[in-house]
Length: 597
Image (spheres, rainbow, N blue to C red):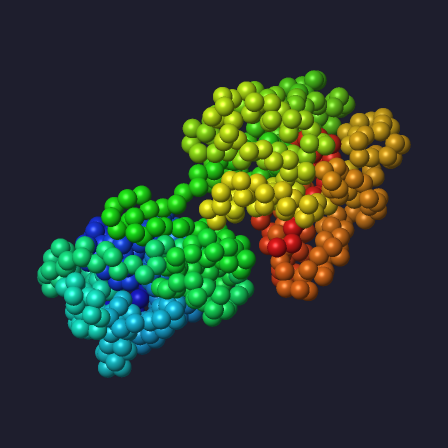
């Protein structure tokens, strides 16, 4: 066997996940470095399982295609020192193969060497006697053998022996391992991965009994080292849209603890650190970019088998005006209270959304405006009860109190609960609708992921809300009627039916600012946002954006493409407008919410 296909590489990765998951407790039992928290196997398994879940049911056409998915999943799932070091290895190994259809021995050797370099670079202070020794021994052996041998299985087998020897030698390089009578746990985990790679390629199971002996020798020794924790907490964070260099991230965090690992792939960064200042660490991390996920773990509790993860269990309730994407709603278990739409002339209009139904009503010559029932307090009360069954407390984010009664209904709904339940419900007036309200919810999700307390989240959101902007190009609210339109809450009396208006939010109100004569709504909104954010973007800040449209996806996509040209715009999602906005401004409306970060 002289080359490796993407199908074989996928099998190697999948089977290595199964192997480490099966034997993770053996790895955990010998875990004494960098701290004896006995979770090295668990962390490595979690990282591999994340990769497996991402690739198992997918078909790939190349190593490059497979590699992109593997790296993204590894970065998301990586936990602990070992998980992040392994992700660092992949960040060097995978890209080195991406431009090769079926890499040969020399190309694989170069990839393993790059994998070692990235793994080493991901650690603040690399030490001898660790997982890095095993990776390096395998990579060095593979490089030497590839100069005189083409058979990948032979090279893998001999290089595996070199890696095994390096693992056996780790106690001689680290006094802590020697005292405990164990080898490095992360090194053993990586050796299991290499063994699976070899087994997958050779389709045979060799007996590497020496590893079993190593595990058994150290099983009873690790508990003696419970008291060596130099920093009590482990903080693991995944950041998106980070353009700060790895070195600069390390410089900002290195004074807070040890075991600092940083691995960056594209604009996403994974950070791991042991610290006695977990909340100061969290705050510094959150200032460097958007936090996708953050975990704080008390390792002293973990060592003695107590609950160690700090969980702030906060559920979210919103009204339907936010127009949040279904993916986000489902992922974060958000409870959305819907509006009831009444169609007086025809109850069963075809269409998947309100905009499509209104279009159909127009085709059928139906001229009666559908009505919207306000959300009653009872609906909020039931939603709060439902979320309290799953979460410790609830954050309710409603549309602007100046545009609906939802804020008052939510307060009344809370008052209908018993005293203990009422104390757990926190209600925020977003002072926005549609894309603006969506941004408030997205910011709340981030703060929850940063493990902020609910009072702190509420205070931060109330400070942030005035900074959120919303622009929209809306049609006259009576566009579906045949007769001349009457006065509506945001339009002037007597405007022609084909007129359009640029609107924005001001203190919770939707205010018309000017007529729009151009049909290029995307260009109009792009120029408006460009002018509003020009100074902040020049200062290196970024803008987060949500786009909503009234059944006008093509124009929404054009706006997204234009905004992306700024290089500092992060478009969270595009969605169709909420029912209330759809009825008043459908079908060509285009709305954009934004905030400078």
